Image (cartoon, rainbow, N blue to C red; front, top):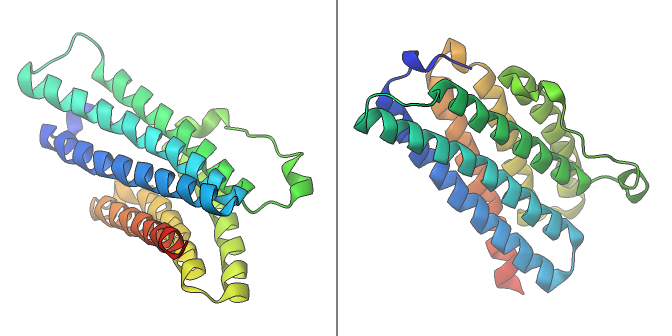
Length: 211
């Protein structure tokens, strides 16, 4: 983790807003995904709903962490607990929940025979941000590959929206790997994530409105 002494206080205010926006978006996707499942009875929508519920909880952990850090430093200037440790624990929770979320997304596209043998596994070394982003990209690329095959087969707007959403999610993690070399990468990464979420959200709105 980066030493917090190198990060300006205002940064935590901005990131808490960004993370909170992602939480709201994820929970809306979760709700619409479950609603789509109730209408269509397709298990893929249920997995999507649970996945984004967990994903949203991961961002909720980051939002609460940054809100606490910002208010503590802004109001009191210091804390009785280690804010570096708190920041580390917040990100560790986000890493773990995100990987579980991605595993559920992979389960959406695994053949039934393989699903029965598939074990949800979160590597111990996820705490390294680079390792987390690499394993996330690998999991998401499998989903992207299956989405592309599905798009070629169906040739529908909804399938294209889903494919774009997961490509944007993969780009999000890829750009964050290069954040230490350029701070602008962080901005572009979160923009890709937001656009990806909105693409998936639009797909679910279309599904629910067509029923």
